[in-house]
Length: 217
Image (cartoon, rainbow, N blue to C red; front, side):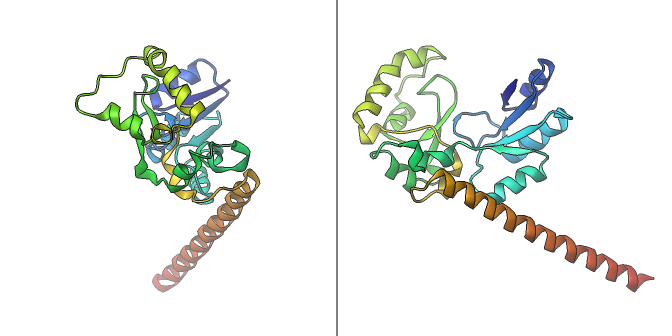
């Protein structure tokens, strides 16, 4: 059983229920997300998990992020936003340019889609629900029942000002349409470079420590 968790409390509950893998999803992530940032959440979950493997999720957009996740105790990462701009995703031609132009601050946490906190691309739809005179979104599943047909029609008819998507803050790293293969190759290349840089720093630190020891001997 794989469990998506957004807090240490969620992780403890999942472990008690026999989860085989935990996905620690931080606030940076897209779609339904909690209040704890990825860097704060992942090490808390890995310490609770013991021998249960943990995947890090939320804001993972480069090989550097993957190496950082490993350093925090995760065994791997869970990636979502990266695939939105790949050719294999068949993202709407009306939506794709908006995704490629988006930066981290162009995302917004809203309850207006499902009734739960949900990170979305900021659109005219989300802006209207954030207006001072807007009604309070209903609790899940009632909000989805209320707006589901409307959102489906927006997607089908590609109503550009209202057209959005769940996505994480890592969208800032993706500025051109790509392929899954190219994304994976970049992840591997960047992660290898990052690990090599860390090894150089480690070796330099060891050398400096040896020199300091010789100087005090």
